[in-house]
Image 1: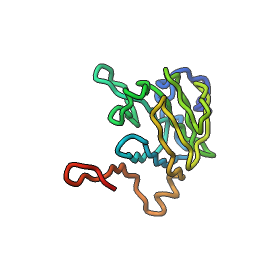
Image 2: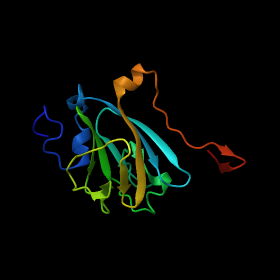
Image 3: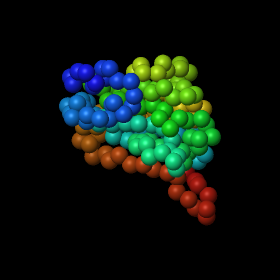
Length: 164
């Protein structure tokens, strides 16, 4: 990164986004709720205060992921270990493909690697063939002022089966 005032400038790798978190001080923070369309439906909540990595883990590499899609079928769906990143921005939350093997789509539009795209409530995201829906995006401060906490929720099991 050559310019400390613009955290989006001159990166070519997800690691470059995470090396200097001080750059992200003062950037608008966002809270996102995603519903991953994998059986059973899974809800993921995340506070995005700096670049948040999305991908799938494996037992051989130790990549830090903020959203690990492995347990939701990421491997079978072709999700890359380093697939995409969520980026906080003053006007909204952005998503960027980081050069994934099988691509990322938002509302049926394939993302060009390295280019940021805005996200909105109701958007449909595909990480390769793993589908997700944006259920909510709000400014973190507004969510906290309303007394909401970020939670990760999964359907509760009753008699060994998930239900809603």
